[in-house]
Length: 111
Image 1 (cartoon, rainbow, N blue to C red):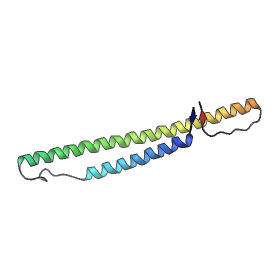
Image 2 (image 1 turned 90 degrees about the vertical axis):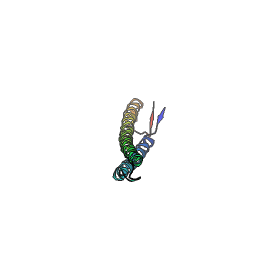
Image 3 (image 1 turned 180 degrees about the horizontal axis):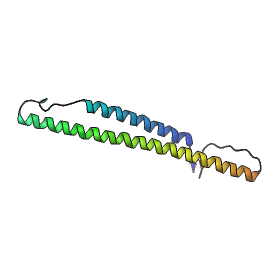
Image 4 (image 1 turned 135 degrees about the horizontal axis):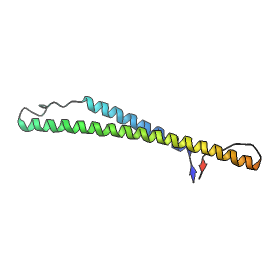
């Protein structure tokens, strides 16, 4: 199996970008308040306003969870890329030692 180190790093960076967007969206949504009487000054309107506010709070929490998950995915992808790159270098060095050339090269990892 071939492991593309650069592809893993690009995917990690894309996850970080998505996490940044989620964070900004969460902050923006959190700032947007809906007053209890925004839909009128009668019982059903106030009840609806509370439901909208509770839903907004729940969505802010969900988006925050997405932000954290996407950041974690980015971290893990970078770690995987570094781990595979290190393994590739060690394996290339071992192969070159057996061949006797002393050259260490490699792009990607084969498993």
